[in-house]
Amino acid sequence: MSLAPSHITDPKHFGKVAVLMGGRSAEREISLKSGAAVLRALQEKGVDAHELDVSDNVLMDLRAGDYDRAFIILHGRGGEDGVMQGALETIGMPYTGSGVLGSALGMDKLRCKQLWQGAGMSTPPYAVVNEASDFARIVEALGLPLIVKPSREGSSIGMTKVADPAQLAHAVRQAAALDDSVIVEAWISGPEYTVAVLNGVALPAIRLETPRDFYDFEAKYQADDTRYHCPCGLDELHERELQRLAVEAFGLVGASGWGRVDFMSDAAGRCYLLEVNTVPGMTDHSLVPMAARAAGMRFADLVWRILETSFREGKR
Image (tube, rainbow, N blue to C red; front, top):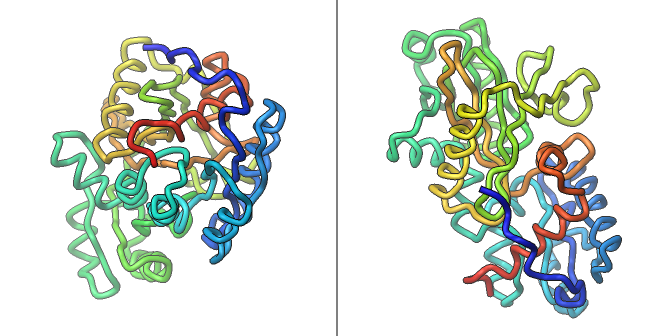
């Protein structure tokens, strides 16, 4: 399946575009980097695009600036979780990416897992925990190592790999300081893959390789020893199946427009769904631009395509 031709050719058709970046989430600095790259690309393409660092006055700023639409490049809470999408709906402003429901569900790792399980899709075994949980029973049920995650943070913030049962309570406390919903997952030993989705089409899969315990914040944004394999090393049949799963998983949580789905594979080659990203990074280390390059798409053309998602049917 290939992308349909771009349906907008004149940059004036977009009107005045606010590139929403920054905000107050734990991923603010990454959002500013992503936003700067997006802004340069849009301006290179002739779009009347402007930076808007999001504050509590964002709706007033949008009205005062007489903007026609918003390119959302806010990562994490307040921008990727349906809050900004809902706010823009209230003033009738078109925006890029997923709507309110898809954004909210996509940000919530626990509810994504529950949806996928209900649809018969594979996701790592897990438990919902808090600081009063019976950690010995969890270790007995899920084995070691484990990965502890806040349900509603991105960029691997607050995640800890636990190999020693004595570390589990501390890891849960760290995650609970960021989110009142914390999950513990069984560790899947095998390669990690990610598949970008653009307008219902899966881009080439990427296999991630890091010498660190897992693909954490430093491996994603700071380390120079993270390796990205695209082609991913799977044969054509298995890569197509991974892409099919990505598109299905993305749609099941109500996500749309553009985003990314992450997987782990075990020693037998079985793939497990990890999470959905509805506003992925667009920095020089980011995966969606990498997959787009592998598909023959320049960064500026990718950004143009994402901006086109603001015209989707159902967007106000």
